[in-house]
Image 1 (cartoon, rainbow, N blue to C red):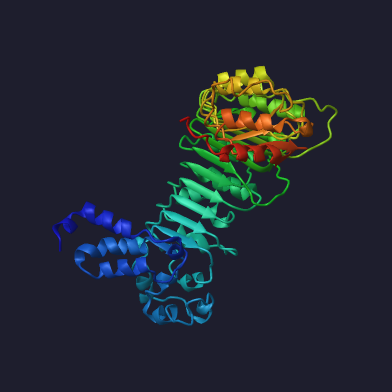
Image 2: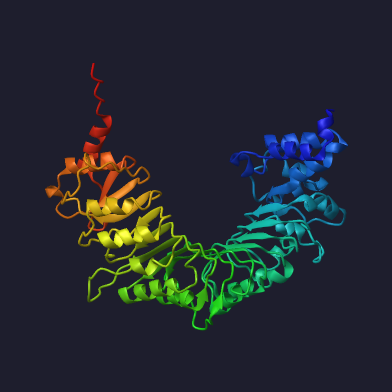
Length: 490
C-alpha cells in the first residue's frame, strides 16, 4: 500500500470524491456502482474499513438497506422478485430480540435519510420506546403520506439539524425540545394553525424556515431567535390564504437577510408584517400579494422604506395576483419610495396599475442606485414618458444594468447613433411603448439598439399588459448583425 494512503486527510479526500454518485444512483436504493465500490473498500483492509462504512451508510433512502442486515430478512429484501415490491413486508413479523442488534448495527452511521413510505415501520413496533435508532442523524426528509402517531419517534434524535416534512405531524409539536440544535425546517403543505405555531415556538436556534402561513405568536417568537437568517412563507396550494396577525407587537429580526411572503398573502397582513418588524440586516424581500389596491400599495411601500433596511436591502420583488376596479387609473408614484435603499440591485414591481417614470425620475433613480442590475416596473399600459435620450443619459450611470423593463417612447427618435460614441454593453433586455407601433421607424430603432446596446438580442413591447417580441425591429437587428463587413480600402 502506498504511504500516502496512510495519511488520514488524503484518504478522506479520496473516499469523499468517490462518494459523489450521479442523481440516478442517489434516487435508487439498489446497490449502485458507488456503493459497491465503497463496500469493496470496506473489505480491503482495516485502515479503509471504518471510513468506507461511514460513507456507505451515510445517506439512506428508506429503511430497506438496514432491514437487509437482519438475517431473517436478508433473502427477502434482496430477492429479485421483491426488489420493486413495496408491500413485501406485509406478511413479515416484526423484529424481535437479537434482530434489534442486527438492524441497529449500522444505523449509528446514518447521517441523512429520506422517508417516502411508512410500510416498513410496522417491523419496528416491538422496539423499546426509548430506543434511539439513529443517534447521529443530521437530516431527515419525511414525505410519508399517512403518518401515524409515534412514527416519527425513531427519527428525531438530539443531533438532528435539518428537517423536511410534507406537513406538520402531531409528533412535531415540541420538536425544539427533542432536537435543540434544529437549524433548518421545511414544511411543504398544510394550512398552518395551532400545530404549526406550537412547532415553531419550540425551536430556539433556527437559521432557515420554509412553511405555510402561521399566527402572530409564532411571528413574535421567531423575532427572538438571533440565528434566524431566512423565512419563506410558501404553499403549493393556490388558495386564499389568511394570516391571523391581529396581535403583533413591534420587534426586530436582528439578523434576518431573506423574507419571502408568497402565494397570495393578503395586503393587510403584508403591511402588518412590514410595519411591526424591523429588519436591519435584510437583503432580499419578495411578496406575492393577492390583491393590492392603490392605497394599500402606497402604505406597503411607505412601511418598507421605514423598516431599517436602507443600508442592506439589495433585492425587492413585489407582485399582485388579481385586479380590482378602482375609481382612479392614475399612475402609481412609487419609484421615489425606494430611493432610500442605496444598495439596491433588483427592483421588480408587477402591479395591476401603471407606475410613473419619466426621464428625470429615471436619471435620479440610476443616480441613487449605482449598483442596480435589474429594474422592472411591469407591463401595465401607461402613457410613455421616457425618451431614448433620457434612457441613455440614465444608462451612463449604471454600467452593471442587465435588465430594464420600462416603457420607452419609440415613436420619437431624438438621438442619432452615428453621432453618439456611448455604448452600454451589459443591458440585455429592453421594453418599449406599444402605442401606435405602426408609426414607428423600425429601422431607426434597430440602428439605435445595434449601435448603442450591442448585448440586446431582441426588443420587447407591451401588448395590453402582455410582453411580445417586436418582430419588425428584431428582424432589422438580425440583418445588421449578419451584414458582412466592408473590405478595407486597397
